Length: 344
Image 1 (cartoon, rainbow, N blue to C red):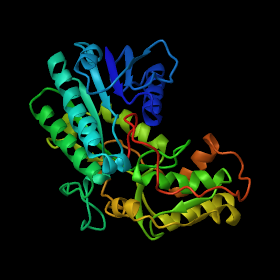
Image 2 (image 1 turned 90 degrees about the vertical axis):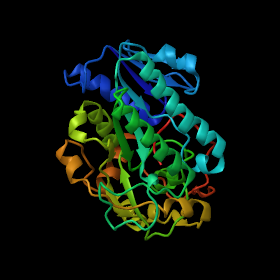
Image 3 (image 1 turned 45 degrees about the vertical axis):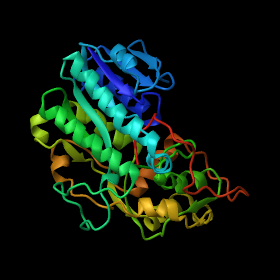
């Protein structure tokens, strides 16, 4: 019994694979499985006899036929071109995020096993003009290329579920913060950078106004929720399979106040305003709060607050702050597009 993880070599894919294995070791796997297959542009970083890698492009039909077989019981579709990359390369976003998603769904349909299908969508499917707290019933009205391709993906997964080809779970993830490493192609990458860089003694620029509300989740909570989603009964989700996964609503200023409480005023001072219209146009169109009571009742989790999120990152990844460093500020300008992750 096989679980496929597209984007399995990425940051979130790796955490999902590790957590699936840990739950299985504890006798608490969301569904029974014997093998996890990572499908990505690079091999999985998880070393376990139950994990194998298929390296290649998610739009390759032959590769998908090799990966998605009659014994496939679950599919995590995490691979995507992220928001900044999608806005700068429309054709790539359409090929990977739309054509790739449909190709995976078609491969699952052809295999005939009706696997549980967890699709990572984004709060970017919403635009401006939403209520202060977005209800579950609010329709998607994206204002970015990334939001548009994710909304198309949601409709595809929902329709393939309605037809009985897959058993879908659409997880609209909050922005994941704090991610370790370097900036990725998400427009929201700065929401990790304004915490991560100062804790490493590096100056960081904030490209949006500090009163901007954002909806965020720690990597731990995001991975827990994705693993939990695989085990939730489809009928409990309902006919419309999209779920606004729990996060916390904070302003950028509140994130920076949490950084100061954690590491001091000198570290907080490493973050300066660096307005960037391209990033602000995308990020400021996204809602900053969601109604998630029903999801919490279904067993999904959320972080306690920004202090807990920062403490979690520092415990796992951050050295002790070293003070100001004469380095170029990091802002919303990010690395090249990729298809091995999930998030905004």
